[in-house]
Length: 401
Image (cartoon, rainbow, N blue to C red; front, side):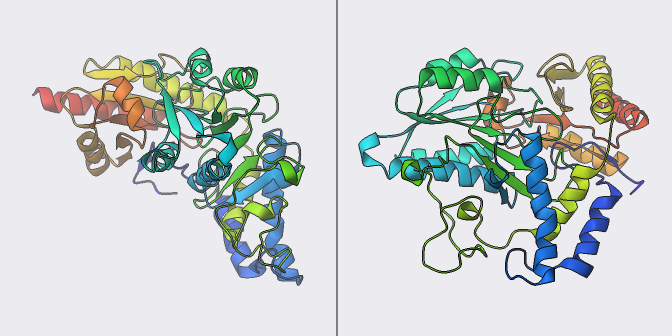
């Protein structure tokens, strides 16, 4: 582990990774790196084992009724695209259903917003954006009011990547089911899997997108899309989900059509097998006090930053209902300039800007400037938090002198 940086950007990607992650990836490449699912020889079988174990663990953690409903992806954005294009592609190809309507929120990441925007610009969907409040929280009643008879999809982040606010997914899922049998709920869980519990069935969720490189402590280029029974019915005649990516799956190699069973139907191409070997190691890394540790560091950040006169904290005031993410502005400083100086002068890694969440920053009044985001992780120490707070105070003093 490097000792020349203080890493406080875990909302972007977790670091450092547990030593077992890199070790497992090196072991895979040296000893087991066949092509998973492509061939029956031992290296092909061994290459598939870590990915299949990841599939099983995700199914257990997310309350998925069948392990084959966990579709492995090249990251959370890849999974979001597969989900949105799958639902909307199917809806648009069903002319008797009419023009599809989609509901989303102002807390969403650009992975959702930009993917939906391409359908808005081509005039293929109607889109309603439900604004969050000034803490970054979305009211389920407002989502319910936005849902219509022609709504086919509701997209909601489980937690804001910028402010850390956890969204009321279960309540939203329940009101959607009350309003219409047609609309599916897609939950972007990039910031929460590995941190905050989520149960596909209990929370009334139809599609879940997962990032492997954040809370699960795996490498980049790994993720998953979990596909519920309403999104992909067991009866093929009832399915409308459109498979945008086509190609080889290893199984059912004959014929020109994609297989019609999960996960093969949505897993064209070779998966990032070495990445999933690393992800498995990250998921198996035991950190019994991790969440209490990160919550305590978050509380220390909120208290310390709240005592600095030039700091304006944004989002929830305490640690309840949030992930280990703190967003703030610093009077007299552009967020990117402050982040750059923290890095260059003190070796502190934080993120300044809009964090791919432009609508949330509009609600917070940050405009194009954005804010500073600090996000501790499992390996962050109290001393590192205190050093960061001291450096923020130095920045404030440098502008006042």
